[in-house]
Image (cartoon, rainbow, N blue to C red; front, side):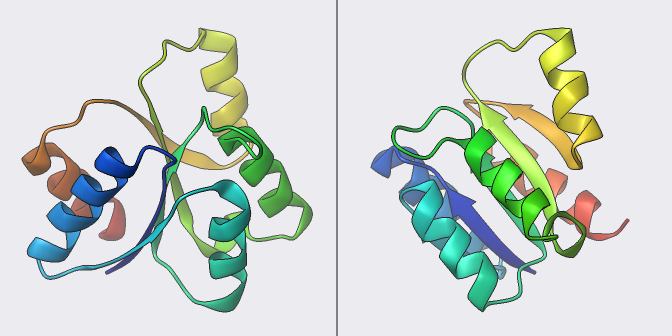
Length: 121
């Protein structure tokens, strides 16, 4: 499975990518939304793990750009957030095509089983 991780926090980004690669999947990491979008436009990914709260170009900006460029149907988007989000915000994200919303921190086994269950759908 090819996974792209867009996360501005280097330690979290490196940890997520290491977990994914250790389980024989392919993780590509991007430190911000702009770089991540360029990678998504250039390469095929099965799943996007997307942080919402990032400076300059947030996860919301990434989602809106993906909708505009008709990329939401090409990749399963999972939002990762340490912040609490309202029910309305969660509903809005799901209506935009986000498949799931996961809370940080996430345990390695939860991460891998979540990715594998997403990929089997």
